[in-house]
Length: 139
Image (cartoon, rainbow, N blue to C red):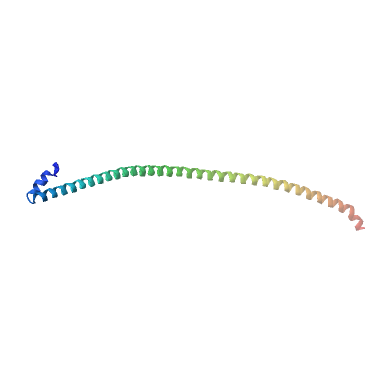
């Protein structure tokens, strides 16, 4: 049985082949044509799906690039803050060192005065002892 869309093809084949052969060829060609259309439609659908996926991936890549840019900017700001923090810590350490040095210098000065006073006391004590003990040895 010949479908209406294949009738024109059947008439053309009848000019060259016997009626049975023309009918069978028309059926085979119609079936092949149907399968080919189905495969083309399936491929078209796959391509459309691939295009949609590609469009989604393009969007994701754009978002990733934007996120990477924002991350790089945040990293630059963080590095700047860390640099300022390093400078502040260095200034603070320098100020503490200078303060400790001043305190140490004051302590050394006080110690010098105390040792000087102690030396003077010991010297005077020895002198007094010498005055008391030496005359007995000298006689």
